[in-house]
Image (cartoon, rainbow, N blue to C red; front, side):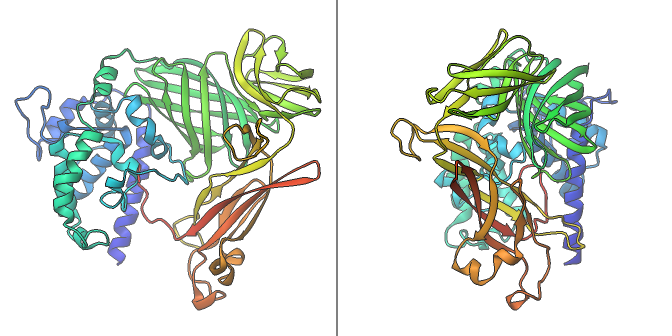
Length: 531
């Protein structure tokens, strides 16, 4: 048991260390990627006579940078590969650029690359019991293999996990035969190695991501922010990065770091932001005009939020994104170097410009009591953005995001920290039909809310989960209980539990509530780049 714990700790530490290595700017190593393969990989793999697939197995796969990182890690720990951190970095870059995934191939599964917590997947029934009972859909959805390689993966599973056929949902069927003869061919069609999307992207001109970017984002505990991100190219696909901006409360945001681009569009950056190490995982649009993704704390990837950047000057987002009829509200227009008069659309008057910075314009606005309900285009000088501001009559419904949350107990003197969960309230106004919860509802964006918890069901109430499983603060951040046995609980159980998160938006004396499920689970002992 102790040996297994040591092995898990070593794998976890290695994974985190290598992800950090991937974020280091490139340098001129002694060998290029192809030379490293010949020197280090051909001890097990073989060189072929096929110029399109020069190396056995290696040349029949395509993966994201994280996917290739996991492959090299597995080669080290299971197959005895000896490779330096510099060689890993070079090889990950080389394989990602020459055998990566196109933007369209990663689009459905970016949540895994961005370490988004609390994602509920919609998995093809053919994969639910054969693959997704152990892996996320993204784990295999972010790979491309020939049919032969998918079959090799099946046999590798059997070799590395010989008890696989004894698991639940395996021992009731001919798992190996089904996986080899039915699942692998389907994977080869759904996630094909020879996909036209990659062939087109591989030959396309790749964007250079130099210059200033107008940024809008969210970080738990800090809230919404705006910033100007400046990327200065230091060498091909490597950038020095600075971020300067403001949080919603007016406090300054400052950060510096470096970024590397893989496969022509995969942005990976590491920064020190306000004294905290953070990572950015984003995808550049094919024309290089936008970056979208997520920024999160390096030590706690669940503490993070969405990030969107527009190259040059542009209106990226508004905060808040809605104003009530007859109401006066302070609105922040997030965007870089916005100059000129501010216009918020018909029925909305800009009373005063409160401040104007490189990353934002803050105005005091008032909506007419008779302003029509609906979306408004916004402009600052010649810079325009469509459907940015919602005018509404009343909040009719509240939705909690995510609708299904997961937190994990931890701490209590142990080495595995608690995994928190962050919730936000999205408000809606009823559309023309006057009924909330229908297709014509008007999305009002995120709104402040009062947060509370209650037991999810009778069992949770009887087990006093509300008392022991954790607490939620005024910003919607849930902190789970301590790991380990709790003598105060029935049978000294640990502090897991099932709770309901309640968001209450109060407006004009009326309270509108939304709810989400929250599972407080046991610690996760292994951290992979793609779970």
